[in-house]
Length: 519
Image (cartoon, one colour):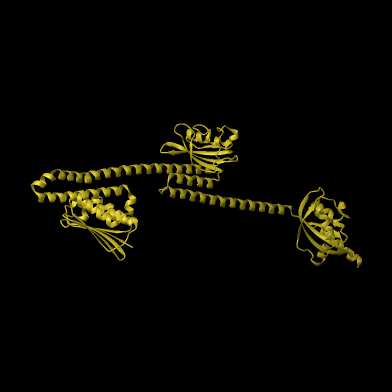
């Protein structure tokens, strides 16, 4: 029987010899009893070099004492859970190199001895593949994160440029718009400093008109005239200039004094004229990507557009002032001057007329009084034009009465004013009512050939209405162009304050202009 058992035991060990994985047979004392050919191949030992040595010889030195402490646990594990879940460990080859192994434990009795079987697989390829996969996943995750950041940055850039365009369409002062542009450039291009320069036409140092975090070093003002430094060269050459590291080239001393190591300057071209430049500063040496240069050019274009818009507004304002002066001069000539001329003529003949015909003299004296009152009303109206704040502060009833007296004095046309009820109007609505009445009464005086006109202001529940009516020759409203008689202007003023304007007129039956504003 014992001979038969030994036969079976030896047969088992022969099968292990031909196993495709490494097999290490270990005595309960921890010495290696046998290894198969695959184990020799894996660990690089000849089997006679391993038999009798402790199992720890196949482990890196840093793990040997741990394995020695838990050797009995491993035997118990192999008895209770044969071929247990593979353990991923580190093996040690004869040449001293470490490599990853997977070990499965089993238990066998041969010749009355308890032996542990360690089934060893070299998993270097698998671990390397897993590591490569992990690196690939990490790189992919990093690229996704970078792409996400890039998309977010592009979104912020688009929003920043859109916000600038929105501000460009407002009437904000140029200084405020340029300050906002440099703030956006500072934020979106992550600069250490940014500035917009206005070139000195006399060839001196440029003026800083807007900046963020710019060093206030005296040398900042030096070396940036035309043709020098990044700022001056951008203006001189008319194209973007980049300096990746001023230490490697002459930059007029500006960046060294200001402690900036990299500069990107873009000229500001306004209607073919180089106004100045926008300059981005960085304290560390760096290169500039094509996208960064294009974005800097976009900020320069925005700044140039803001400067151009400011110039156009100045031109419009100057034109408006000139037009207003011309209108006032025309009104003075057409109204006050003519009235005063008529007054002067009457005053000249009045003494002689009084002696010949006292009744006619009294009539002329009354006319003189009316003309004088009209001239005074005209002057007051013109003064209101020169002082818009006075127009906002005045009472609407007083304003309408003043208009009526001015028309009466100028056109010898009686204009009556009546007010029903009491109330107030917002300043914008009051000015709109006044302007509409002014335009309507001017039309009555110039075109209607009326004998009488009346103005009626009515404060009613929920609405306030203004009526200007005359008994003149009238006109066909359907045939009148919008620009005729200032009809378009009156409609625009009414729409601006959400009021309703109606104009009723028939040839030979006068005209009614009515504007209604609801609370």
